Amino acid sequence: MMHLLLPLFVLVPLAGFLISLLLKRRAERALSRTAYLTAGAQVLLVTLFTIAWAVSGFEAINVKELTVFRSRDYEFFIDLYFDRVTAVYLFMGALLTFLITVYSRYYLHREEGYKRFFNTILFFFSGYALTVLAGNFETLFIGWEVLGLSSFLLIAFYRDRYLPVKNAVKVFSIYRVGDVGLILAMWMSHHLWHENITFHKLHNYELVHDQLAAHSLVGIFISLAVLLAAAAKSAQLPFSSWLPRAMEGPTPSSAIFYGSLSVHIGVFLLLRTFPFWEHQFSVRVLIGLLGLATSLLAIATARVQSSVKAQIAYSSIAQIGLIFIEVALGLEVLALIHFMGNAFLRTYQLLVSPSVVTYLIREQFYHFTPREHSFEDTLPKRLEYTLYVLSLREWDLDTFMYRRLWNPMKRMGRSLDRLNINRSLAILLPLYIAGLVARWQVHRLNEGLLHALPVVMAVIGLVLVLRAFTERKHVRRALAMVIMGHFWIALAISFNEHFDMGHSLLYLSGVAVSGALAVFAINRLRRTERNVDLGRFHGHVFEHPRLALLFLLACLGMAGFPITPTFLGEDLIFSHIHHDQLLLAALVAFSFVLNGLALIRIYARVFLGPHVKTYHEVAYRSA
Image 1: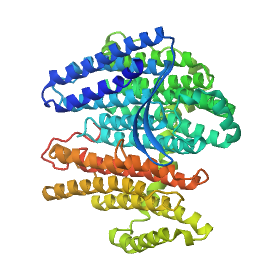
Image 2: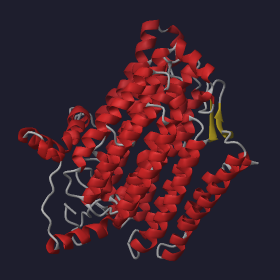
Image 3: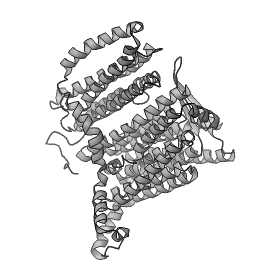
């Protein structure tokens, strides 16, 4: 009976989200009531279910819910898993979402994006429930992507302003870096287990020990990939600087996302995969040291922030670093208690922060008190001032990311400015035809060429996507580069043996249909708006909301958002990359990540930000 009830925890928030889409934009009471009734029903269901589950003996529940796709040697299925980690995260998610929805119905009263806010909150709630109930990597990745998209939409909630949109794109880019880790972990785990392994099976000590004893390097690779995903999602070093930038959204969304729930998903990923890496001592030491370093730097940074939201953000980062240490030490119960306490505290702090700032401004006029001496005052002055300046600059983490990651990519992309559509077709179309001919005559190729061709073609696909990512003028050129990059990736993987051409057709069908919709939306926009380029934010969503929605859906289809043909195709593509083709896997993963970044950037530049027409109200650039 309990197995049958488990899908309700995903279906209830999903039903609330779908109902909210059908409600009118001005129906504030109906929207807020739908949201808090959905969250309240979830709280009640989770509480009753957890009590019944505890009475029955705390036995873990694993349900193979739905097979989405099955081929000869691969199966993609939705798997749900419930244990004490799931119970804690699910209850906290439902309770805090309920509190936030009740708070938001008054806080956002008569806000222009009232319906959009509750739509996005319920969409996030659906993705969160699926993530914490996930029984395998594929199911977790679906919820993981929903959380990433929800974050982008809520950070850019004030979409007529420059900074919220810019920071939304920045946070989404860090999330995509985390996606690389999760994609590579999924890919290598397929080869390690030769199946779509479930988290329930990871608790089988003999199974895990035997596999890791024979493939220790593979185990370390998977663990490090998981750590990369967890660090990016939970704002650990060197990704810590994105969390304060994410506070550009409304206070309630900051509370539920970056104070309590979304920011702790990295911890959840480590807890869920703990049986896999608990006997890898070097990985445990690395996780502990990462958490310790993050905590020390975040504590120092929090003490010098002038914004209350930034103070709370860095304080939360410091606590999550301590939770990383607790997970590395195997203290699961302590980590769960710490998660609950930190989530409740940060939610409360963020919700009352506007009032606290008002009170402090008043108090400093009427009840001034001199600054108290602190620990830093005992240090040598040179060291104290050095720490102060470094903390004030947030340890140059933003600069580090730009110099070591984004700027090199932008320079490489801009070096390809001469690669326009005509030249691309003139050069790459004959090469692509030659590649198709080589694919049909694959049995005649020598072994060295057979190993080199997939890598060369994957590099071409990556170059095209990189060119789209750095395009500053033509929207349709950037879209064409993204589509061409997908076709080159599909051709690269097709050279591996036992490849099913039907998998490529499934993958490319999603790309082609979504690409056609995106081009259609841009062409419709260009009929009325002559200025459509990527050199600045245009804010066309103000006058063309339906086209903006259509274009966003098309971009998500091309980027492989769950569950689209492109998403299934990308997973199938990775299942055909061999375990010894690490370079090919890295190139393909990086291409998929840049695809999503390029498309979201196009959407943000064309439809979000201050309106390009001066007769509309425009917020200050610093607002």
